[in-house]
Length: 269
Image (cartoon, rainbow, N blue to C red; front, side):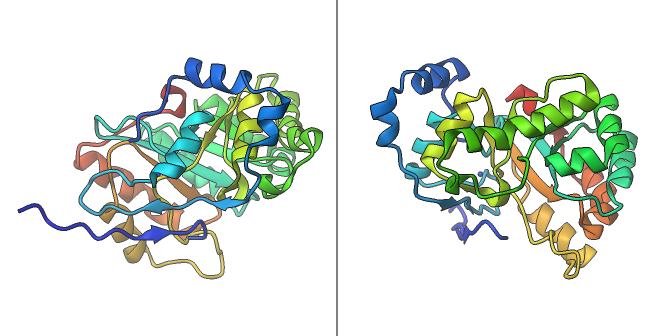
């Protein structure tokens, strides 16, 4: 008899569904008129996922899937193979990113770094290194607000375009069109506006309490939790400010490879 699964709802502070094609999503979004957008919910939501511990993907309620699938949003990648999509959020620099990049390079792994506009301004060398070494440098907003609470379209758009502009000024390249909503806060309306700008919204199917630099989890706890919840197609969210993440990253990557996992880029979604 198949082992009974224990499913927990994990709030944001602490995500395959089969998504419609990008073309289909784009058609749906572009077909909205003003009257349609007035009907979109502006209620703020917190991203969560339902944990699976038997090496099957995290899941979402149908009502959540119905919303995110409609607006080019992802919390999982390809679940048909043992693929992992590794992502790091960068709100500020805590001295770990260069070490993280060293580990990724040594293990021949590409990742996505979601950065804010101030991070780009203050960490030029790191941003340029990310680009040079083949990682995706993606949009995490200009000021790290709850996007669900910005109802003015111009103000909303600027949160993404300011970050784009800073990246272009530094690198001479357009920023990849992937957006991670700060704090995982979103609404149907905010996902619509994000998609209208040509972005894919990237949530996650794994995260853990790693963001508080004054309350870092032990290395043993972190490795156990990550490996216990490993699943195909997982989009993993780590915070680069975490000393624990930096200390365990090489070990975790090697353990994933030993279990037959390989790494994919968000560009392959």
